[in-house]
Structures are given as C-alpha cells and as structure tokens.
Length: 82
Image (cartoon, rainbow, N blue to C red; front, side, top):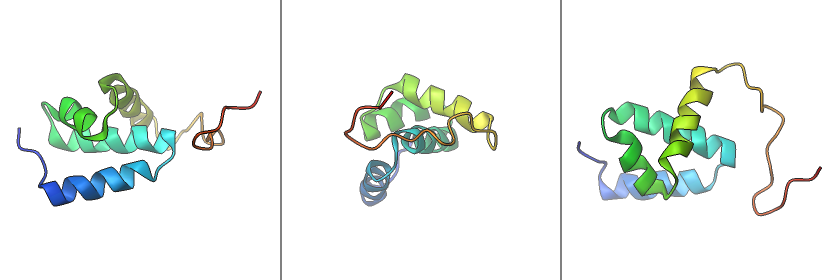
C-alpha cells in the first residue's frame, strides 16, 4: 500500500490533533477506509492511535447521521464530570 506524501501526512496529523476525541476516531476511520487493505495499520501508525480505535470509528461512521454521542464531547485534558 502506498502512503501519502510527507507534506500531506504533516497536514493530516496537524488537523487530527485539532479535533475532539470522537472526531479524531471518525476522521482516522474515514482516512483508513479510503486506503483499503493496510489502511488501518498505516493510519494508526501515522496518528499514534490504536487500530481498535479506528475500527470503532468505522462503526461510528457506519451509523451516521444517527449519533448516540452527539452532545457528549469532552474537553481535551480534563476529566469527564459525573
């Protein structure tokens, strides 16, 4: 599998880091899906996330526009309040 050019990878990583946790998972899933075979491993390595996170994102994307977690977005670096 061919990966993206280095310049594009840098842009992708910068964009990924600007997203919420939920949106990161979904963005990674869409990118991995575009690449096909080997995409999950490549994107997990690029973004430094677990391949299972990407697989969960794939499930999330499959169920859109329904979003059970629509109003639940945690602030980065802050514990979730009860």
